Amino acid sequence: MKLKLAFIVALLLSVASFAQRSDAFMTPNPNQPTPKPFESFKDRLYYGGGIGLGFGRYTYVSLQPMIGVRLTEKFSLGGGVTYNYYSMNDGAQRYETTIYGGNAFARYLILENLFAQVGWDRLNVPNYYSISMNSRAWVDNILVGGGYRQKFADNASFVIMGFYNINQTPLSPYQNPILQMGFNLGF
Image 1: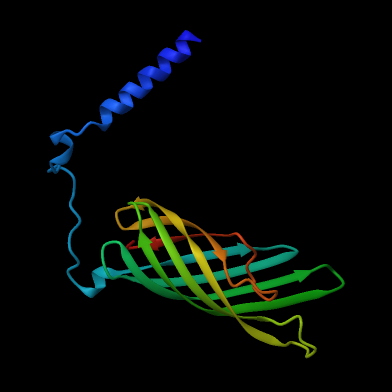
Image 2 (image 1 turned 30 degrees about the vertical axis):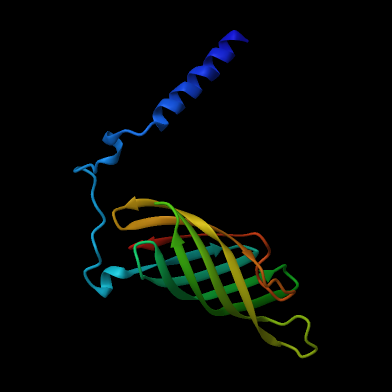
């Protein structure tokens, strides 16, 4: 018990001493690279997206390319397209469909690797509630959430995002919560 108490006191003292202001922490480090200003519109662009594949009894192909433009160092706008192909073959029956459409998003970099994002997807999906055969409908999805980026090169990062669709309908292809993974070049 005394050992645990001594450990907690030592931990609190070390945290308190680290929190004290020191001019050594306030001066810029000459070895740390400073963010360079955008030199051209091309410097503001970033690209990426996601790819999903699954084969077998259930086949799934997903392509989601995107492009974004940084308006400031922390805030960007972008858009992309979505194409998903699904098929299922259980031997006696075969089912096949596609989902396609576009999206737009706004992204704000909260910390170096953490960002908030809001987006709008407009997707054309099969309408299972229609009495017409092969009927389709456009569905709007408003996705609110954020993500984490992990750089693996100077200008490339792996991105994992989590969203909640605040416009969930029976035809929405997303089930809350939504997890997406992909990559970005230039972000």
